[in-house]
View 1: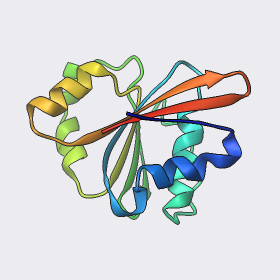
View 2: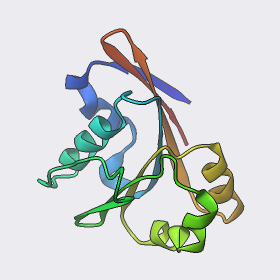
View 3: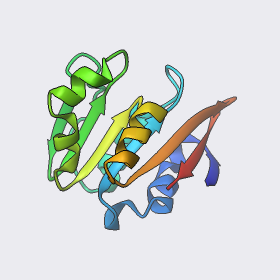
Length: 135
């Protein structure tokens, strides 16, 4: 596990630590409410060179920013219901899949089906954030 403590102006370092441009796939974002999950996704989308306006898909479940960039918010969603609706198939599409509230339950399922992912835990530290990156 790699841990970075950064201010919001240094989010590019998180993207570089993830080797984001060379490593598409599933990214599970964990953190409390207002910890900066959507802010990190905004930085990631910008880092990938996509000019889309990034907003939290809280009420939509998913945003498709084009160019293979997808953003999901599964907060208070029933995971079994999402799986029945084809959520795993969505995550199999080529591209970058940023999943807010991607918890241990989802991580366990992804491991069971052999799907690779990266987990990023965001912890507020006064006016900074600590990003714990786990492969």
